[in-house]
Image 1 (cartoon, rainbow, N blue to C red):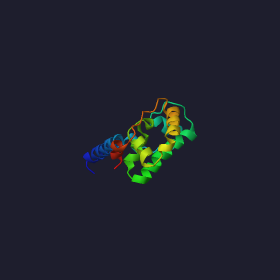
Image 2 (image 1 turned 45 degrees about the horizontal axis):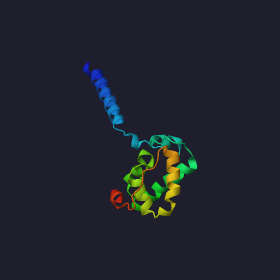
Image 3 (image 1 turned 90 degrees about the vertical axis):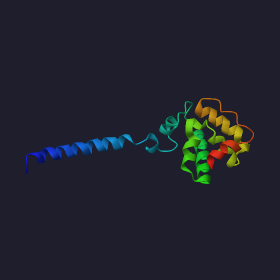
Image 4 (image 1 turned 60 degrees about the vertical axis):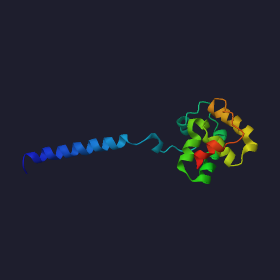
Length: 132
């Protein structure tokens, strides 16, 4: 073995280590698996109200059903974003024909988000375009 061989091995190992670190930095928070309907997920989507598993699970189920309807992974993430305070969530309510439960949904939304739910327009056609 030549005297440069140990140096080359060390250099190669160092390059592999740096490459591994760079790969770890590219992992986004959304790719980290958080168990559904847990307090950790509640915090992750920035809910600041009270964590009541039953009420929270009810709202998550709306997003899950909407995802199952459209089979678009972005729908699931966007529906839960900002603690359900976004244009996709009311579009999902409309598409899932849950208008008759809107008062109940708003109550649960207020409880878990800690903020008044946005007033939903009578038709949700514009936000529903996000779902397609």
